[in-house]
Length: 433
Ligand SMILES: Nc1ncnc2c1ncn2[C@@H]1O[C@H](COP(=O)(O)OP(=O)(O)OP(=O)(O)O)[C@@H](O)[C@H]1O
Ligand SMILES: [Mg+2]
Image (cartoon, rainbow, N blue to C red; front, side, top):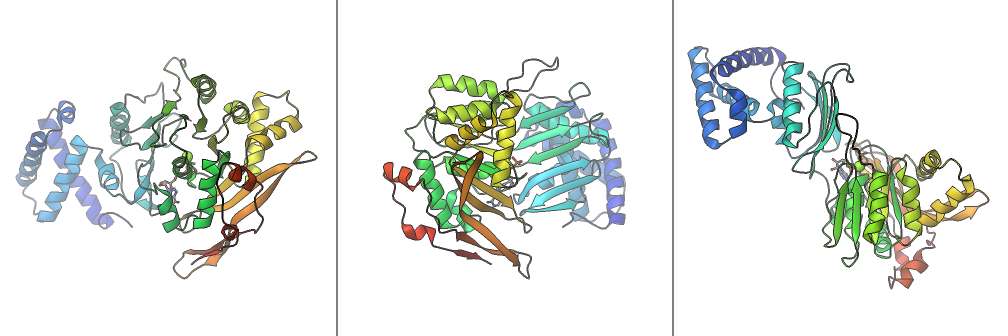
């Protein structure tokens, strides 16, 4: 869907608005004003805008006049053209490629909107307003910035000379997706049986690796599964940009730090992980394993921090294993391949693969168990999968969550923790249509 009117009307609207804006700026000290943002200041500016519009003696409908007023208020006090997008709760991502190309993800579907910025300076100004609110900055000497907004949304901005077509901004909004296990089932992201098995595994301290592509729902699933960690355990979370929202009482949250302007003072995930081992954690949750911390994470999982969880960017469970292996190999190139694989086999029990479907839904497409090693190869068996059968008339994905009917080996481990799963759990198919 496009916001707004036909392009001719749009052009006139923009022109007139720019004109009113110019006059407004000449009358106001905008910099100071944006710091106040009290109701009174808004009212004063609104009145001033109306005055300017009326002085032009251009016949405008009431609606049109209100629209210009609202847009200019957003300009002065808010995030300009981004405001209407930010106020739509169905929009989960806002992606500004350059001043004229803005895409959004709404209800899981990526689409272009005809939001635009006056020029690069305008866009840069909005970016600056966003990042300076959280004490970060972006300019030619530090042209990339990652920030987390007070509401938990994640922001990345990258500007020239690194971004070739002008400043680019990506916002992943917080709180638009599922936050609880029930919602995952309602959204048909997972079958109740699969969820029951996963939550039992979490409670019994069986280590889980969540694998998936960009935006597939890895962090969301990690967050939801972590809610099932018993309250009497001590948790430490390690993230690049804190996204996890856990309700446990005994929790310490850690976040990495980017280098300062001189390129110094960075604190990486690996350093935080090593430090966290001295904090007596029962479990460590790493938002996403990306590199050198992989080795230390496996070690931790093998030495008393069972039940730790993380996510990894990969397209299949096999791919997840090979990526993890190369992460370890990159920092420990002397370690024999077989040793690395053995470590992985004993550290991780379950790989959950999540995927973003063509209809915008996210699904758990596979739950596999790592069962051991044969020769030099890690053996895995799939316990559940989503079998895609096609696409319905309305574009929705049709398929079924199916058990493989193989009983997982970790059932013994569950039993030792006093958790008994009904055998029927591994027999139920759930059709999705
Ligand atoms: N099961 C789901 N159903 C619908 N939307 C979902 C689901 N899970 C996640 N989402 C939405 O998908 C988007 C991406 O989710 P999330 O951040 O969990 O993915 P990710 O795989 O961790 O992404 P990234 O690769 O950027 O780290 C978010 O907007 C989230 O609200
Ligand atoms: Mg993520």
